[in-house]
Image 1 (tube, rainbow, N blue to C red):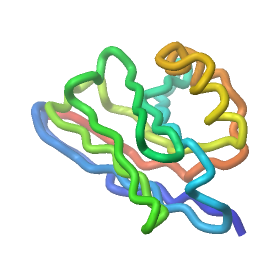
Image 2: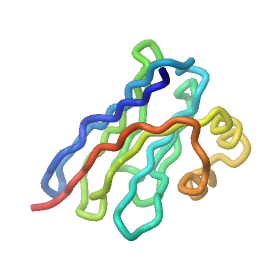
Image 3: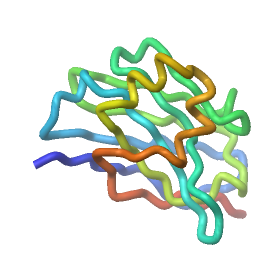
Length: 135
């Protein structure tokens, strides 16, 4: 079975850090770009970051640039989202997702893909992990 297992969320104070993980199984992980999105009740789903299948290119939502770092370890079939200097507005449920077309979309649109991420269809989704930034 195909699985994306997101983990690492929690409660953290403003300015704190969390590292989210997305562990994949059941498909050729290193053939797929991976996306992280977040959802807040009452708001549209928002793309946060994405990484190409090789890990050679990453793209970020403007509001997280310089604070979040996305990486992947293809030997471990895992993607990591390091989130530093967290702000209350980062509070959301975070999901990892992928689709067979995502690599091609990234190749064509580059950074502009981030603005499209919330509207794309994805083959596979992780179950979501809650991140709460609050004092």
